[in-house]
Length: 155
Image (cartoon, rainbow, N blue to C red; front, side):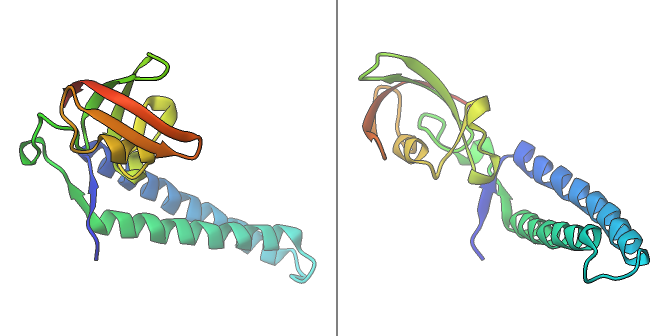
C-alpha cells in the first residue's frame, strides 16, 4: 500500500469531504426509497437517476476512504526546509516572461490551481521538488519547457 503524503489541513479536508458524502448517501437512499414507492421501476426516471447518483457517490466514498487510510502527515521537522518539498510556498521567476509567481507545493489530493496550490506530481511541482533558492528548474509541459528560478522558499 503506497503512502499518500498530505498536510494536516489536507487530511482534515478529506475527512470533512467523507463526512459530507456519507450524509449525502443517506439523502440519496431516501430518494431511492421514494422513487421505489412510485411503482414501475422500469420507466421510473427518478429511480434510475438516484441509483446512478448512489453508484457514483459510493465510488467517491471508496476513493476518499482509500486516500485517508494511506494518508501520512508530512511534518515540517521531517523536511529539509532549505529545499522545495511538499508544504513549501515557493516564489519563482519565470525566466521567459520575467513574471514572479508563488506556488504552494501540495499532495495531488490537495491541489487547487485557483488557490495557488500545485501538486508535487504536476510538471511544475516535479520540477521544483528538491530545488534550493537560486536553483533553476525546468518544467516540461505540453506547450514546451518552462524555466523557473527559485527566489524564496517558506514553510
